[in-house]
Length: 529
Image (cartoon, rainbow, N blue to C red; front, side, top):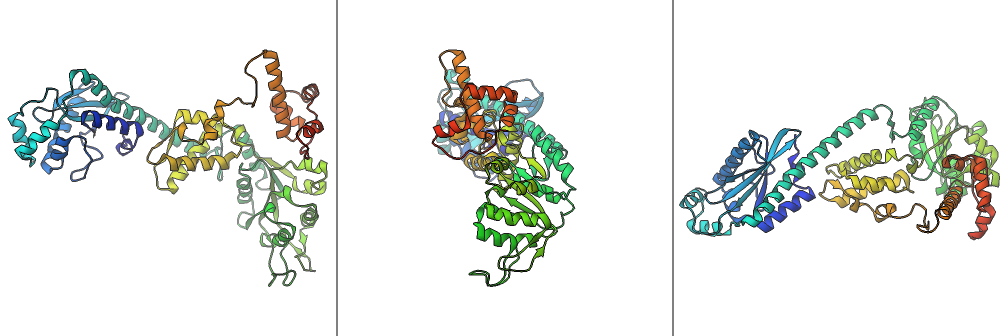
């Protein structure tokens, strides 16, 4: 079934109709397989390019005449193998129809009316008498007839090709929409299996590994440390752990540890008693007490001070804590799910994070892969966000073009899923009435990503050996920074042995201290493990 209402807003179709209307003063109509005019009903006002058609169609009898004409042409086309058929509309004027055929099935027609094949001359008396039925006076008939465009023989082929292009475009778009709907249906069926885990979406192997791990720990009461870059969905992981656990009927409380200074964070976590500080006008329960029996999600755990780490360690050890300003210890049975985008192991080695707290938190470690490492999920997520954004705005879902998808694959998505969601909301708004998201609608940083060398400054001329060594050096340098100088992790990413990586680090002089000194100092993060 063709969704005729969608084709009124397709950019290509709309532009072709405008060109045909402006150049030839001809209007293009859609007709379904039953011969019914689509997207226009009797009495409905319509902006016409053709003066005669506007006067005829504005009259009830004229509308009926036009409807009967296109129904007759539809019947003729559906029973023939014609690529197009020219017909008489009103005496002395013409129309042309092109079939819409998809997979050998006749689905309707594109009809263009009306024009003249003969040079302007005197009106056929039959034309005058016919138009009189539609309420046109002889003077109106004369004026309308003279306004009908004479399509000269030299223009006729071009006119036909333009009109036929509308039919071809509808066929193409109908196939794309059908393919997309089938794909969405298939994905929905698959999401019922292992492409979705609670609110998380992903079919890539890294996400399947995460799902498998979550399956194993869902019934556990152990503390979990979720590690991953900003925007990867660490809170979704935490919620999934909670709502799949025996604690699912209890409270889930999230807190961003980086949003508070030490004094405020202590009060938020442990509560306070009346009069303990200025503004403490009454006793207040903290998150540990409020989440008793449930789960406390502590985001950005790597940002808390060492003084706060000591206080947190105590409650993790035996479940006891003391509110700010209080003297009486309280107990809580809360499950901790902590999250961070920092390398806590490196921080332990540097002395900025307590080792005993690290081991308390890192009972079960869940690493959330960045979006650039799960390319298979980009379009799956993008279509999900497009559908969500369109639904929130009461709009039709958008379709990603092939070129747009290519650009999205080339981009590295430093903001991960959060950045992708924001981009899909942005293009939904910018698309307006367009249903197709093109590459031109994407943000400049995404459009231009594939036009830049993957390693900035990499040479494109000179000896190949030198260029390869330069590329290798930059890849290792950038990789060391990204992994916090974790050579074991980087060697695995690069597909080489750790010993081989160490040799290359020495070869290119990529010693950690030397690089930091060259770049102007700054503390290193990570580990040489």
